Length: 305
Image (cartoon, rainbow, N blue to C red; front, top):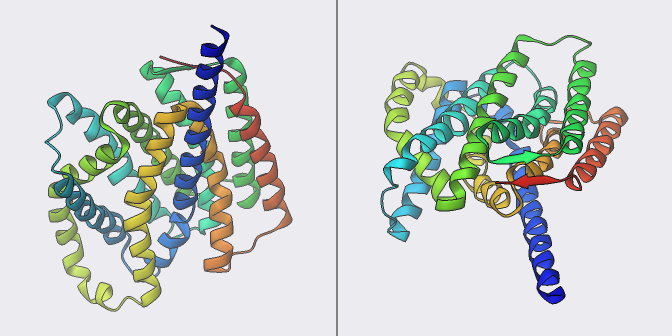
């Protein structure tokens, strides 16, 4: 009996640790999204970047689905897939692409720090998980830190672009929570692949319609802009989700979602390296504080339904 309990505990620890590691890899990929988007929208229209990356990622997803010869998803999965597509494939990329045309990646990144709280809240409202009061306390503390950081960076007030970012966060939280729930039965790679493929027939005509009047600007875009577009198409829109959903399936939505509190600081590092945006001691201080909150939050109880 004692041996079986030990093995069950080891399996749970293994699932939690593997989930956290997979989630961290996904977050590291997502962390470069804003610097890459800033590179892309410097020359390319925001609408083209937001919709074009989804269509390009859908081509990769379609190739994988055809290679695996996977059947069409069941009817019950279509509505959840539509939520994933609306939040992660369309809403978040479109709104952030518009916002990052006018604000630095380092400013926009900090607001993404409230995504774990938003994702956990959506999951709790859906009845998938029941975090403890201690978990909520750590989630609120982490979110307060990143919001304080945003206010400090912007001189004590929020911009119009911040409203777009917050709306994007809410849409992404819906997509993350619904996608992680569906991934338990379908697998993370199928979830993001089918969400992309099912959205592509709607997005492609809109992309062509919006892009046609701007063909000259698109054709004149520089190499850096296309490299940024390539990154958000392959890693931000597809590969990162394979790790992210896989992590949440293994370790739980609320717990692994806390790793995303570190995303703003991956982005700050990327913005410093790629865009030469300043990295100050205040940035590093907030990073250390948020990482401490993530570590504490991981130890709090989260009951999974």
